[in-house]
Amino acid sequence: MRKRVGIIGVGYVGLVTGTCLAEVGHDVYGIDSNTEKIEMLKRGEVPIYEPGLNELIKKNMAEGRLSFGTDTAECVKRADIIFICVNTPPKENSQADLRYVELAARNIAQALDGYKIIVDKSTVPVHTGEKVTETIKRTNKEHLDFDVVSNPEFLREGSAIEDAMHPDRIVIGVTSERAAEAMRELYEPFDAPIIVTDIKSAEIIKHACNSFLAMKISFINSVAAICELAGANIDEVVQGMSLDARIGGQFLRAGIGYGGSCFPKDVAAFIHISKELGYEFDLLKAVQHINTEQRQRFVKKIEETLWVVGGKTIGVLGLAFKPDTDDMRNAPSIDIIRALHKEGAHVRAYDPAAMPNAKTLLEDVEVTFCADAYEAADGADALVIVTEWNEFKQLDLERVRTLLAQPIIIDGRNVFDPARMEEIGFIYKSVGRASTAGPHR
Ligand code: UDX
Ligand code: UDX
Image 1 (spheres, rainbow, N blue to C red):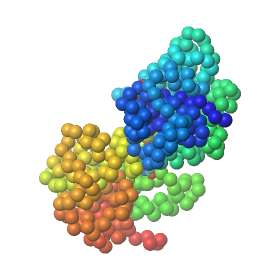
Image 2: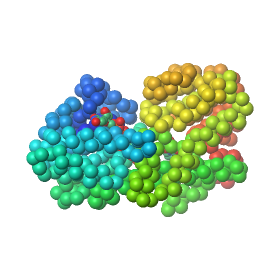
Image 3: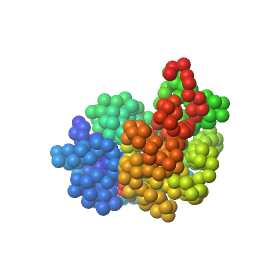
Image 4: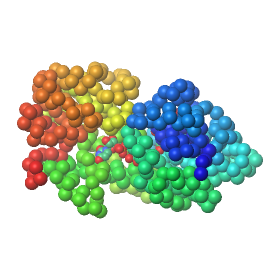
């Protein structure tokens, strides 16, 4: 059944969610406090880099199912289901800053003109649904009926459209059957299992999922460290582990640790809310510690390989926190480049999408931004791989070797096969791969 949907906050999550809801036939009106962003969208320009999003927005705007504005009252009037998708950044003490969620709740309450469903999509700590409900009740002087729903997002940047169109599951936390029914109808076209829970459980599901995935990454990075010390190979260890269906193979890629706008913030917020509730989540504190250490271990690896980093030129391939995005939030590249710069290295960096954002974040650091990977390698004493973009996997390695002043590649994402790299003539260091021989080779 066709629904009228409002989106408050058309950032990564709001824009993808709104566009995909329009794509399955709903009427979507998105607003944002950032007027520049809205003007761009109205002109058909997309303010973020997300594969496939541009085309989908244009198509749905042209077909009249997707439009944008800046006025909350207009958004509330045009919608029966209103999604709150504003950002929930971490405060100094890691607690989620909910000021924008609270503001959205107040703005919605002031504009209510009948029964509405207000959906929290932003990642928030448990009990936020209750707070949003209280806030709307307090602000809405006419005591109009409404329901609050928690509907966490599980979108990965870079594959957000695919994740939104074909989700593994849809989680809906509700307090009324009326809201549950409307949300089931909204998501019916997606053909995915729908789990209906209470609001608090839905909120915890989101924090638990992201923390669990972060834990898998830190776990495998620890095992990779053991492999290096013991002379074993993490690829083979993972292969042996992942064929156990109870473990599975996903999120076991060893590297320089997780970054991005979600894992670091959500792990920290889950630790914080757990403590507030009276539980010390020591396991997650270790996950954080291992992740920070992983970046330092990588810098140490560069130092050990080059002996003296000061005065050397280092080419850095990849700046975004992962491939297929221009997102630099909490990207390991920032810490790594800063550490190299502090040691006196000259950094030449290249990323297919994230350079404009990186330039702003690294304004105070002297970095030469290059037009492509070959330019970054040209004359460098070592090439360092920080983000595993596909175009790096397809590099002409012979050409790279001749461009480098010394044929050294230190690979933080295990992009290449160590044996092949040695054959080509590289001194090649990667993560957790102290041995290269194995029965499957
Ligand atoms: C955000 C949250 O940070 C994340 O925890 C959650 O899971 C989903 O929403 P993201 O979409 O990546 O993630 O944030 P961002 O790209 O910063 O988008 C937020 C948007 O809300 C921005 O466009 C911002 O301008 C807008 N906003 C913020 C408002 O419209 N009003 C406000 O009061 C605050
Ligand atoms: C994540 C969650 O996957 C998504 O469900 C949630 O809603 C938002 O947060 P995202 O941050 O976009 O998505 O990226 P993801 O693909 O999960 O990667 C996060 C980080 O972990 C990246 O820095 C990536 O490089 C790293 N990673 C991922 C690893 O180091 N190893 C892995 O095996 C997987």
